[in-house]
Length: 113
Length: 114
Image (cartoon, rainbow over all chains, first blue to last red):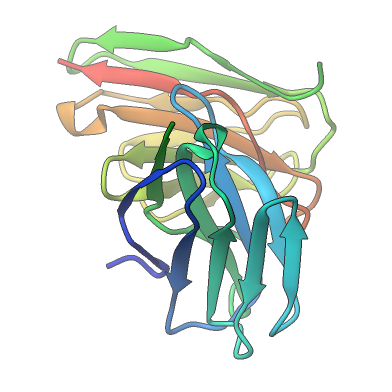
């Protein structure tokens, strides 16, 4: 069982459509991060959210951290083929004194022209 | 270009053989990590090191060992490879332990144990 559950596992949409990816947990996190991974490459950090209720925007991507710091969402507006990739959420548990990130299994997003 | 270098890029290994996956970073990051990525399971932590000279076990450490003799290098050794260790292995680093500034990942090593 993953500590961080991502949904959906797979998402295929047309260019110009909107999409939302969810990351949920029963645990509280001191911070939560989103990464994007392309085939044959390692994940690349997109954003870090720290405060409950925080919203961050990165061009057409909007990230939100839940008020209780147990969940997060990633919303993409007017998706483009370049948004295709595996989106991973990762959290730092408040109870982890060693500070190791826990990763979700990822959401594979495919945007077709 | 600053970052993490992993070698080899891919490898086919006979079961029972010993192998070391190499990881070098040039960012002077204190913390380093080894993950394996398997379909449907995501990234799972194998071992980590918060500073040179110290290491710790992650979620799936059995069959693997690491060392951290200096800040830059963090090799992962499979003492006697088994087919279940077929996976894509990623090395990562962060400025300080806790990863609050995010992790930087290498491009991975694709390992097949036959």
